[in-house]
Length: 122
Image (spheres, one colour):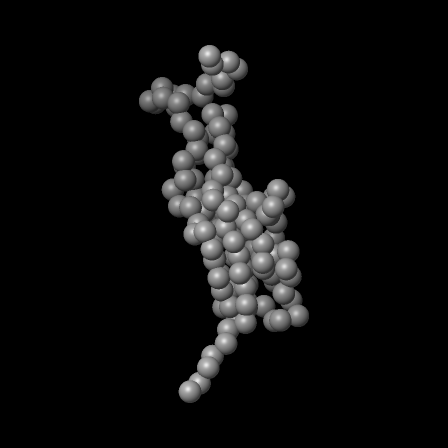
């Protein structure tokens, strides 16, 4: 039995279209504090913008000099000094979310691991 369904149609195709990930981030992203990283996530969404990052259950925001949310919804982690390390940012779990009137999709959890680059010279 189907109840309370919101129906959204593309005027050109008259087909229902929910969000679809075009690029979903990797499960684990490891990077050095001296390199930083960019995590990309994009979705095809009719009726709403691309996905928003999520840290735990809170929307992700820019933290100047630490993390930036780009207009294309990529998440940038800047290179940092050891005193700028924040466990809530650099050892966290993130996910991408895309939503419209048809539904919501969530990416797999993305585990962030930041550490010091160690080079052993033999």
